[in-house]
Image 1 (spheres, rainbow, N blue to C red):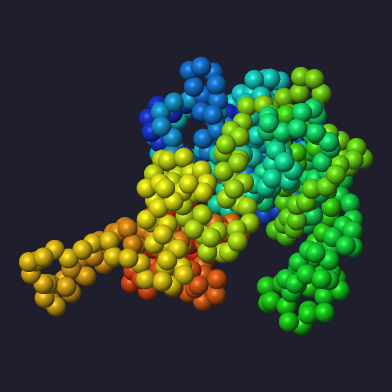
Image 2: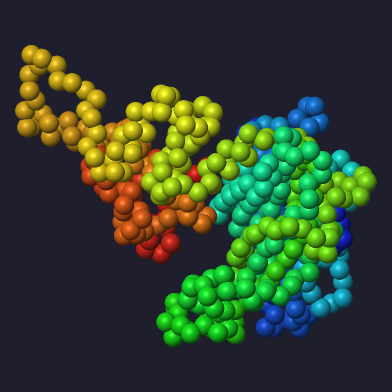
Length: 499
């Protein structure tokens, strides 16, 4: 296959792939780019080559010729992009997308002439057929819809480091930030009941380092970060704000893994203007990491101006992912905005996150309103708040008269049986608290040392552990695979909250 041109609006590579699965199979799909392996002894490989970004989006093709995003992997610039998925029988469309400028080299050829290879491993035989992605308008529309779906809160599981932040920047106007492993998608949505007419332009400012930015008009030009905004960014050496990394006074006390100031990438400012009609949603900016230092520092909005980057209003007949749409779930974005809204205290924020998670698992509508105390989960919320405040909870079971008292041996046996039981209500309450703490951290990841030593985590977990007699361990955490995922980084156990 080959990359797309820098000016291509659809961002779809030259070929897409139709995958036909006869029976349920597990697939491992890899996109492989050339590497510099063997440059020591080969003169023909001694040239500069920086791989581009290849994101894999998998869509399901139904009988009505409609498509639905079911899985994918969004990554930055890397030589390998891998997607592992279990598929039932049916027909699927694999769309390789390049959101950045493509690979960079000194041989004078463009990215549309740079090749890469697709490798598919399957547990059962599958049929893979390439389809032309450059001239087929239907494939371009399907790819654009898949990219827009990946930028919304409803799409989950597209990256191991996936976070969602929804903020209401103006009455009726929401900013949706979707961060993946090396890719950040920023969207703006305007509700129907907002002020009539076309909204005033809003400028979207993003401070990032070692990243490419793309808007509706193409690649955005990086600008110098103003001094006032640079003071608010965290230093890359000591992680403290108030000074630039090149003037860090704490270089001697920097962490061992941090580089020196002359080896660090500089912060850049990317700007784009947004102007939406009522009821419209548009993908405004896509940022792709160009190296391992790629990161986004801050995302702010201000009154717009036409010199920032142009309105995201594509030309007539455009099928690119930056084309505004009118069919989107307004209630879902409002729920996420309420979840990300500032809470009066950390305990209230945690209680709200646990209530939302429990409501989603039970299949109920997780609308966070003041009437939550009248629902069936009122007793659970009262017990949670009582445990967070340190007050004893009321006993829910009364002793039956004329009932023989249990002996010490029987009580020990019953306690042992309760410990061996998996996913008791008390254990589930502690596990939900751990998942809520993990979701509040970048990437939804927290290690076992932070749970036991961090002051904010101890303030929340210690009362629950003391109340239910729970001791955090690997064996105990493995009892909740539906909400917690475990991994190891060296000798440290890492807990990841599942969506």
